[in-house]
Image (cartoon, rainbow, N blue to C red):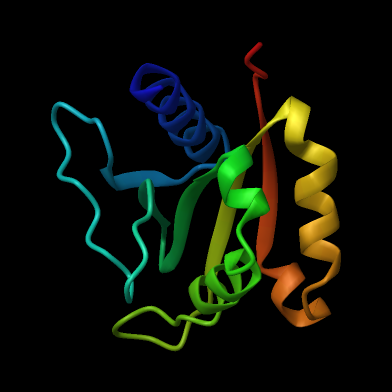
Length: 126
């Protein structure tokens, strides 16, 4: 399980790189520190592009069944960066087998919040 989560974090980080972001912290990294908790939630990666901040979060099947997931997504997207009023982009990594369920959860959120969330399709696991 941890091995698959590590691969998923690697996939989120490479997605950051493809979009021009520089990774600041990440879970399971050798050279970068672990990201701090944001509120009471753990995140998997934090990156920046110029003055824009992005958070990477891996969502599992258990997370999709959690009733508090919309609250968690709302909390993480409503954050602003520490020294400026820039909004934070949330990259949510979901395996390809759970992509439909993740889209269903996102459709329940407010359109303003949905605009700040980008789904990243991760390779599915059997």
